[in-house]
Image 1 (cartoon, rainbow, N blue to C red):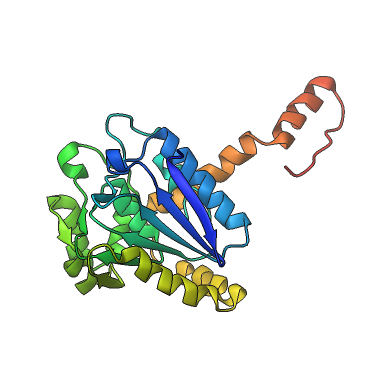
Image 2: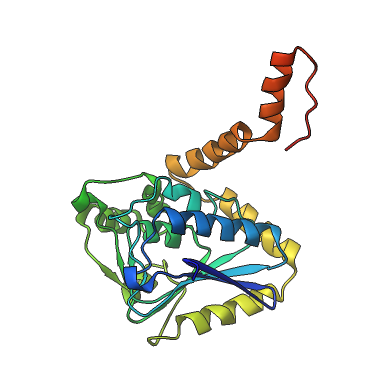
Length: 245
């Protein structure tokens, strides 16, 4: 079974992190599969994505510390893959570390009452930089406390801070997120995408949030057919025949 599931339902993509025995921790396989899911969503007919986690224990425990992903940023919506379509998170149980960053980058979050948010990186001696963007998604000093102290935050507290759109009874986060998604999918797609695009332009972002998308574009160029053609043409002393891919 795939570590990331993708289902299309009436213009809504349901993307599921599917390692429940590992609390949906993200390793290289999951990172690559989630990146592919975002690409499918970006290029396909689905208008809204709902991201959730399999099982009841955790949405995701973040990066798999036993099998750490080499480039977690590639799986992050809006960073590893630029998305103009809305992304809604349906969260239950633990949302930890790298999963907090995914939550931060989502457009909306529905959390059930069992949800616990935790960013323990300061206690683990690791930090990738993207999570610094939390200071523009919740009150600055509260975000600093959350990152520096490393204590858990309840769904109710996250709702008070405006980090979560809605808190629902245990086991109902996916259903409630789908309710939002169906309403958004029924709206004018071009307007929905324009709202997200313009809204993101007004949002202050951490330096790493701005850096990684550019790194991705440079890596795409480095892996392109045109780059290979340019090198061949130089070696063969002929004009290159570029294809734009």
